[in-house]
Length: 59
Image (cartoon, rainbow, N blue to C red):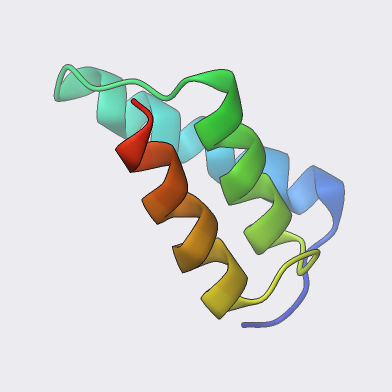
């Protein structure tokens, strides 16, 4: 995955959140933060999956 700027990631996140809202879903702050870290390249895919699994276990 290519790295994106913070601004690009925020734009993508707004679009995704709007689509999710239509379906009745939402993200909490921790989930959103994790996704933004992945979109900007701050963490690897494997780290993203590891942290996402941790979040799901503690939900």
